[in-house]
Length: 306
Image: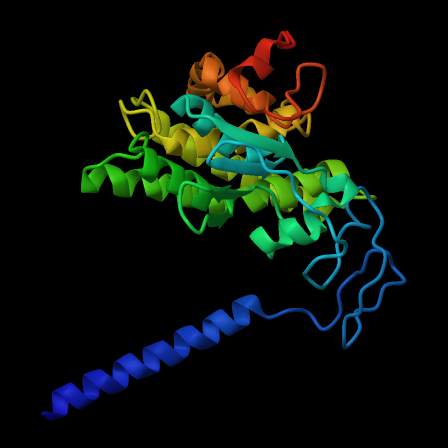
């Protein structure tokens, strides 16, 4: 290498070093910070304690079964163990859209059903939904909502585009929502609605994220009927339950000024109008129109709530 090349290399290294120092300075933390409560002192080593609140008693720093509990099994190939929350809705909406037969059993997370031995055998992470597909021998176990939805869509050959570009775009948005959901639920939903105290920093932090996420979707939907264009896909079914959660579960429509997202509003009205979506939202759900267990279409004969 000539002298100019070596000089260029030194210049690049010097620039990188300067940028590293700039970044270090930018993220540097003050020696002391205010705490909440004021008496709190961050320990050198964290140890678990009762944090209170709706979910505090449920969580532990360890995984695995806490009780011996046998799960029921129905007659259909798809055996779903779930709850009528956004992650559960993804699966039941798809199954209803497909019109396939399945059995869906309610996992009451407030009664710690998700820590039963049989459920943990399907999902070691103890989160709903979980499923067995008995059309295979031995049956395939499935956990994580996106894994379940993608498995079913691929197997049934519907709602997942077959061309490479369409498939990639669909999966992009499925994975986008998998990454965004914790900000909506575990972040905003928890600190806005469920935490035992209101913490301004936490509520502001996650409100900002929910607004940003909503803006991403609203801008993307402009000029499109569905998330992937003219084709209705699992992307719509995966995104819809979480985008409606701030209004439906956390009663935060006004707080987040959700009505300003006109494209989302239009798209959600289309989703709400679909009979299969309406049925899927009732499975393992809450309220007077809930289908606690779903084993056949006849289970929906109970009129839905207005």
